[in-house]
Image 1: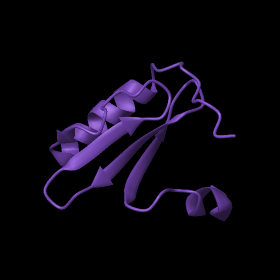
Image 2: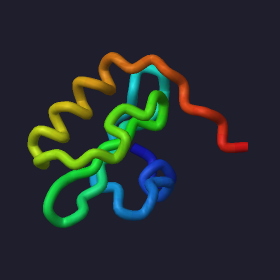
Image 3: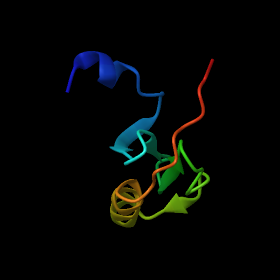
Length: 73
C-alpha cells in the first residue's frame, strides 16, 4: 500500500476497510471500545462495539456495501 494512502487516514482511525463501492469503513478506538462508520452509507453511525466484533462487522459490511461515498468538493 502506498505511503500516501496511509497518511490520508483521519486522526484516530486505527483500521480501515475498503468497500466494494470504493468507500471506507473506518474504525476509531476510543480507549474502551471501537467506533465504526461507513463513508458510503453511514452504517455504524459511530456506534461503539467490542474490538474483535467491530473488525468482523466492518469487514463483512465492506464486502457488501456498494454505495459510493459523497464527493468532498
